[in-house]
Image (cartoon, rainbow, N blue to C red; front, side, top):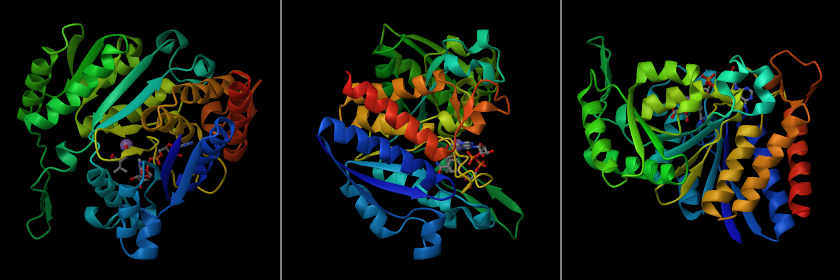
Length: 363
Ligand code: NAD
Ligand code: IPM
Ligand code: MN
């Protein structure tokens, strides 16, 4: 298996966590005799400083020429006063748009091993396993018109979808549900927004193609509560771009930490892989970042871009095993370190790697 992976590590903890993800992929390649070629390119704040733009043309060209892009995170406090189209985050939105993936898969499941460290009670989260499908190229993030009219002291954005944009992401969500527990929950705000009424009507229309899937609709405000109260009731959850952004950070509470959540964006020219968390400027450069979200993102590369399911599953099993053995990064330990071993970013990466090796060599 040959794979060209472009690594855009970005800002803050981005380089720290992607280093660990790449190291796991190299381990898998060495064991299985695969050729994974890695190249690097700048995006975000680091690109603004060095190239004067958050998405340099060379990065975009390299991304389009690769088989998969692994992104760390972008953003930093020093850029917070810039206009949206000049900020590090603009580089991320531009690369998403250029690569064309519209279905952002964000799995969130409760690790039994982390129950003791979760702010939710074990009996609430035990067995929770949700696959969020976040629409990634439409809605408020990309809708026109958008502007801050400073003279008029007024600003506006537009939440806009075409029926086609909703149907294509809904179809992917339904297809994924057929391989899981056959339940789909669509989240909208159809009691207030026309765009959500179009969303709901379209999801219901696509549902006709999937008679075996049980469909429910929830309003986004209620959904944010249901997720904390009864996360086990949900299987595939499909939703609009901004709603998906918010609900998936919330689902970090089910998984134990925002630092645990991976994502894969499919449906476009080149798949884009990024952990759900951001650049975490508050802990950057201190070895405190949890690399597991990035490492599980590496597993998604193997699953969705390399067809190496056994290797992807081995990474996921290794993560579980390492947690079972009591190893934690500080975000997972939450100050409760009794009986646990707290590791740095690189130590956690090494533990997972070592365990992946044991699992694959003895498989
Ligand atoms: P954040 O996700 O960076 O951090 C939120 C909180 O979670 C912080 O307390 C942070 O320390 C913690 N956290 C996040 N990832 C962690 C990890 N791997 N291990 C341990 N703790 C972790 O969100 P924020 O603070 O709202 O945003 C910081 C910057 O990141 C902003 O510029 C934002 O725009 C950007 N951002 C980028 C991405 C991306 O590039 N994909 C995603 C989200 C936010
Ligand atoms: C995410 C992030 C991004 C988003 C930002 C950094 C543009 O929060 O991937 O969840 O809002 O999509
Ligand atoms: Mn987000």
